[in-house]
Length: 186
Image 1: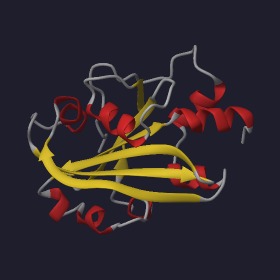
Image 2: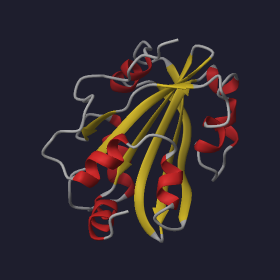
Image 3: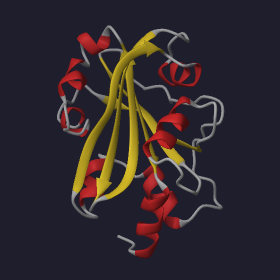
Image 4: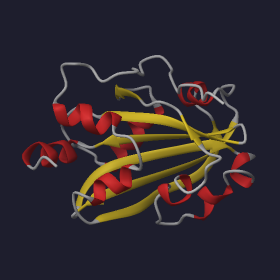
């Protein structure tokens, strides 16, 4: 099965050429983001929220759903060596959160990667990226995670598919993350 891209207006299939080498690497880095972050230091994960809602238009399009379809949302914050570095927002249809993606409801403070990279039936779309801005729902999540932080909020997202059900995962790299990786490249 060829998995559909999570494109929606404003999401780009490639990193703009004006961005740094670090941006190009991290915004399109394959594999589990958690593994990449662990190579930089000690990673801690904090759950910010888990809840049901109607899918916002941007995220519904990214999953191929009708806007306002019921979805389960999980929002987390990852820190590297005590520095808040990445905010992530994951969504799946509410029914799938009780079915093929029920594991996301039981992760607690474990990363989503724990359930995604050990199942051969899961396929991942290509990454898309963007500079976050209102009214993209993820923009509000990222700003709440680090209020008052100055700097652009660059994010990436992809969709995982299992038995025809999507799990949209968006990851926003906070300004402190970029400052650290620019000073100490991997």
